[in-house]
Image (cartoon, rainbow, N blue to C red; front, side, top):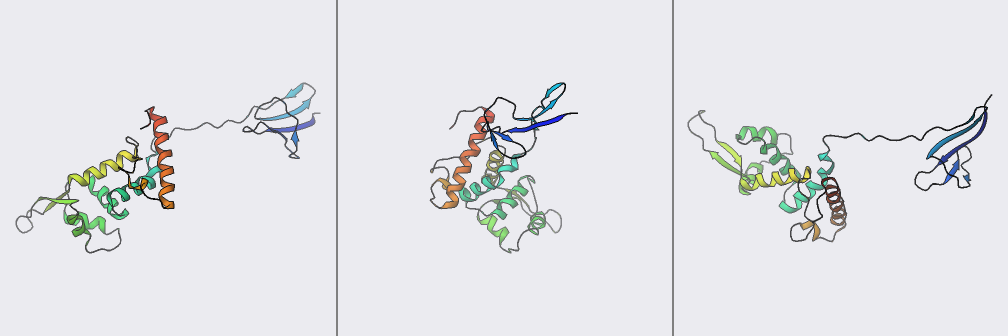
Length: 202
């Protein structure tokens, strides 16, 4: 019959050994990160440490959506809802007023939204209306609006880093608490990008 000797746990970060049952710190001794020692007639049995096997995830670019969205809002002086409309229309290429209204129906009511987009020159006319119910007026995003959407996607997929100079990023001009927190996360995000891609820091 096996006689229980001792259950030992070694903290993988500090290397300190603890008695599993009492929590008492034990004298230093070499061993694995997690081990169970039991005295048996055939000798001492050791259980190998548990190891976590990380799994590769194909799509993780939305992890930084909040950071990228905050940067875009500050840089382009645009609201979250306006960003969502532009990203939706970015994939449409050409669209009608009806298509614009369909997506707008998901947002808070604003009767001046389309005029606002036209005044900002984010939406331009691609083809004028002609005849009754023959050819509807078609719109498209302006070159500037398309560039904005493209930059947002490149930041999300980490093809490009978010600028960290006050000349190129208004977040690095402000002294409020929120800007300070976002500056910290932007630097962390850029550092992880550099580690993954092996590029030199900017």
